[in-house]
Amino acid sequence: MVCFVLIGGTAFFVYHSLNLFNTTLDNLTASTFATANTPPILFSDKTNKEQIPTSTPEIISTTATSTDISTTATSTLVTSTDISTTATSTDLKLSFSFPKKNSEVYIGCAYQLSFQSSATIRLLETALIDDGTNETVEPSASGLARENKIEPNSQSLDWKVGVVWPGKYYIKVSNINGADLKSYSKVFTIRKMSKGISADKREKICKESNGSF
Image (cartoon, rainbow, N blue to C red; front, top):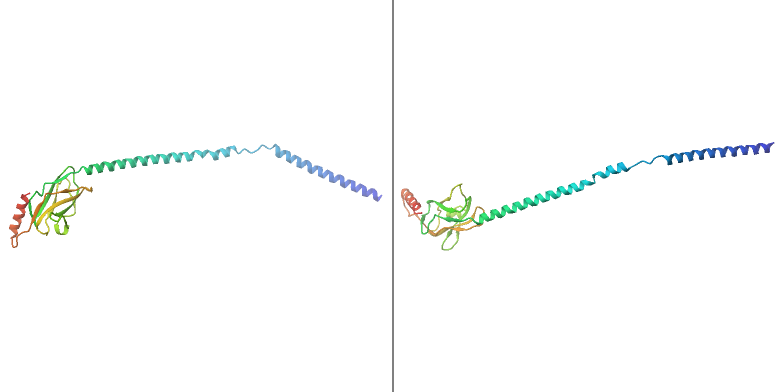
């Protein structure tokens, strides 16, 4: 009787265990088939959307090229303008109508350095030169400014003769309108007023010497 009970219990346990195993296996199999039959997720749309902006580098490159072309064109224009300005400056001609050769001017008298030019003169760099030594007389002594701004439509500049040694001199122009160009006046004589001369006599001498130009 005991053996029968043990054998029967063992058989029931084996049967129940096999039944549970088969049930679990069937569930796992069904889950596997369900996963296999599920349609795959398509990523092509998302991928394509992310790849759409591939043309952006080409647009940037085109813009940069256009800017470079524009810059090159501007540089060429500036170069052409500089060449034109240089040519115009080189063509400048200036000659003095004052002072004339062998004219006499007096220390302390005011004169007008007059000139003629092929173009409008805006700026002159001038100096008084000793004809004997060819040395430049400093503006503080000569009374002639180094840089002279010329008034519009004017062809002269003012000069009050400073305290210099009497003798022969000439005016030198070393720069015209910012260009390194040279021009020279005729040689003239600077004289000193006699001592003890009256103011009226001095004024008369200044006027007469102005007329001599």
